[in-house]
Image (cartoon, rainbow, N blue to C red):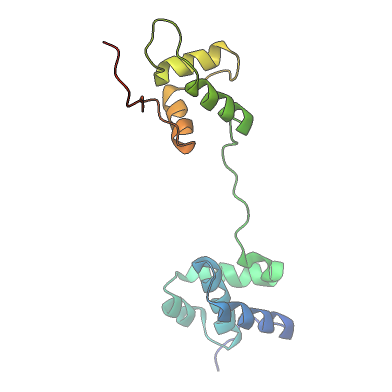
Length: 153
């Protein structure tokens, strides 16, 4: 007889079956749920690994996490990462500065000129011209002139 690695409660079993029948899950969540159902049916870790194309330690850890945390492990936990350095308000001010008239002696804003001016104005402590370009790109703002009128020569 095959060893049963986990035993789902009736409520958990019903939840998983309903969840997997929806068809609009992230792949990670779907595989975790399928693994639990298969382990509950009495399949071995090796059989589940082969069926779901994941490693043995992965299935083993899913079973352990279910036994300790319940179905809460199905969703990914928030990951740490670098905090956002520039707020929405600062991004808006950078964009509005790019849309304003360039300084005297310049025909238009350059990314380096914008980066320097943003630091001068104290909007941020430091910013690279590449980051300014990324902000403007996300805001669909272009530094090129779109004026189709006669050019000043």
